[in-house]
Length: 563
Image 1 (cartoon, rainbow, N blue to C red):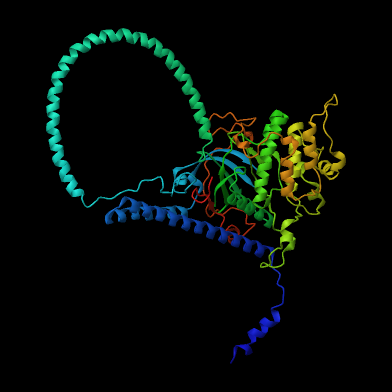
Image 2: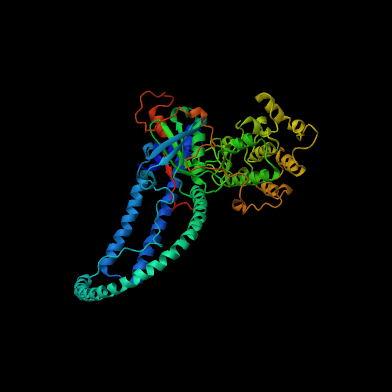
């Protein structure tokens, strides 16, 4: 019987033109699976490429040193042993017990944030940045014993016996000389004592000056320690799995993980690792001890024009880097700009971020690709953000792009100079109404003497940021705003070399004085791994929870990502 007469081919011919609907859950899981496999293959492929380089370098050094067969075997064993140990450490599981919990520093709708200190089990076996070095360029290869070692040992023994005889002769001569020298030393001691008394007075003065210098150096060293790339203190964010009880919340968690894991920007908070147990998801991130921009504004009230210029320039760079990664933040506000120990800011909290090139309403099949026109100007319709910094485009539900982040930056610039947001009302409804009718409600603030609080140059930039819609493409608009007169004299490429207007005064790396921890004073305990916890609410079944967070674990390696 030929294949053409089989009924399966007739069935296929009837259904080949049929369009199948794919549920959002299947679509999301397929996208997660695709991204997970893609990242894994890229990272592992990069590791294989780097391993070949290291082995080639070791062989090159062997040829240059002209080693023997035994030496070559010993060296190559060391090379392969280091590679296998790296792969073993890569497979080890991170747990909460790898950290010492110091304090609770924050709590939000999704989870809690703790200040933790990593143990050696995490910093060494878990391969944090700057703790593992797979490059052999700066290391000397360990050499094995040569075939001629036995002959060399015999020669050294004969030489040692001859040296002992010579040493005994020298000792006899020294004894005679010492007796003569003792008499001379007694005379010189009396003269030296007089000189020493004079020197003591001078040295006392010098020691006092040196002590002052040492104290200044200690302070500088403490500041430099705070600037090290591998901190001894980290921030641990813990999210309860049962709180991620909807598809949108699950997307937010995965989006935050994706943004943090893929970026390599100095303006975004760095993720070091993610892991999970039966009840919680964990994010291990850099700790920034200076608090956030909102706490600075609430403490100071308003900043001067130079300080506002500095902070807005760094906010521009952080948002620009996020957009280059392909994401809209959608929740830009002062609370999400953390101040690091050196005074510079970093953007955080990417839970509400959205991929610029993904439009939920344009999906047809899982195989279909978006055209270039759709990718150039995508629109989103979800109502997200904080009321004071929401764009009218979000409230109108007519669609928006990454220009909504620029609207929020305009609101923050207004708040930096005036001390309060531009559309603040008595309640949320009034605030949203002020945003919708922003052309009428947006006015420059004045003092009791009718003097302008915000300078004209800054007000011109605010009005350009607070406009809907933006005619240019977002990336072109941002470049134009960076050339605005308000930023006159600002070098965006060298801004990290500038000393910030505010640098936190920290006693040590564990200083949490810039965080409001009054609500968490009763917290005192060590986090522990939760396994098979019976009493949790089952909004998802155990099987569903495991499926939703497959591939969540991540760790950042120095050899894979350049700082």
